[in-house]
Image 1 (cartoon, rainbow, N blue to C red):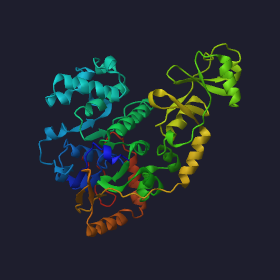
Image 2 (cartoon, rainbow, N blue to C red):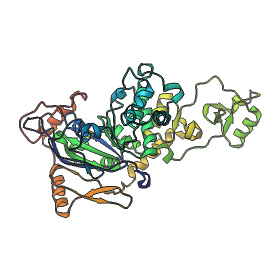
Image 3 (cartoon, helix red, strand yellow):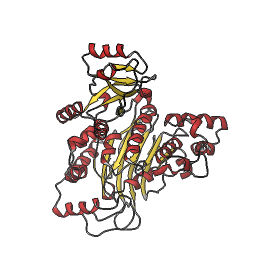
Image 4 (cartoon, helix red, strand yellow):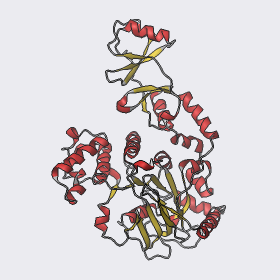
Amino acid sequence: MSNSSKITGATILLENVTKSYGSKKPAVNQLTLEIPAGQTVMFVGPSGCGKTTTLKMINRLIEPTSGRIVINGEDVTKMNGDDLRRRIGYVIQAGGLLPHLTVGANVGLVPKMLKWDKERIRQRTDELLDLVSLDPEIYRDRYPKQLSGGQQQRVGVARALAADPPVLLMDEPFGAVDPITRQRLQEELIHVQAELHKTIVFVTHDFDEAVKLGDWIVIFNEGGKIEQYGTPEQILAHPANEFVEDFIGSGAGLKQLGLARVRDVRMRQLPTVDLGEDAAAAANRLTEAHAIRGVVLDQHDRPVGWISRRHLEKMSTVVLPDEKGVPTVGESSTLDDALDTMLVAGSSEAAVTGARGRYRGVITVNTVIRAIEGLSHEAVEEVSVPVGHNTGAIPVATTAENGVITYEMAEDDQQKEDEWLTSANREWSETDRQKWENYSSLDPAEDVVGEDPNLKGSGSERA
């Protein structure tokens, strides 16, 4: 969760919002949803549930049929749409970069529209490229076609942040890249959010991604119906109903690996050996530590390989033996990512790195297994869940001393919401289950409104 003293994001409220396309069934129906300031809220659900429609109603790329969109206490439903979108960052697959503009020009596009002077734009562009791990001197003057898919996506994130918006909307931004690049981009986003504390709304079809990135997860059913709104821990430990259980799928224990970070578990400390140092002295350190091998570090204290005492005894100065390099994971990586790294490398352990890639310790497969056992027995923290329902009841706003706006239901309306949730979480019939299986087999690229599990008839409007 974000530190409230550092929050630069804004609270969002979708108030009783409905979107219809003229069919009998709305794409989104009477949705009331609070998105807390400075936190990341993940939208997930089957194709056609309205999650992308909901995202695009926030910046009014799609206009709501009824209801209000409130950002930081301001009703933005009636304001000029272009002005609104310049105040909200927006990231899509492949970054959506303009191919005829350089990286620097793409990042500086919105500040230029806002009449920033050239020097301010240049400084902001370089600052953001550095934030997303792209050297400005190398990448500023390149064109999108000269970048890899992951680099294009990083530039897309930098462009979305250029005017320092309080809100960042991300529509399946990492869906078109390979798994390794996707993992790196996810870690990059975690790093950016830890520093900036924006309000991020992120649409994904990947529940594991939602667990890894989200402070909160909203699981939608057709028509924008909220089946469950909670923290990843709450949803994995206590799914609200059978729909949620089926959406999460099997292996909830393994999914809990996405909740814990490498820095949260105990690391082994192996002796370190510097490249170029006296091999006899290094071998003595391993002997004193009762270690069979150590970690070789370069001049920047970055791990570059393992070395055994036997190899050191054959050397005069330390050089890397003719072996494959050491697998490494960042201390902000999830245990899931750490396990993947070790399995792919065929190793039972990996070096852990911190800021600037400096060595921190070693994590082992056994450490991960023990962490799984611990997570399965760990009590889930009770936290107050933001407002989210489809009852039509309107929440009341309160403003904290730090200026952050939150919402809560009036007592009568809270009872109405609780009754609705109880009804919504009833057991499924066999017909409902078959319809869910039909939804889950749809192409994720097609966000189609299908048949309501509770109503007869079907629609064909896009969600």
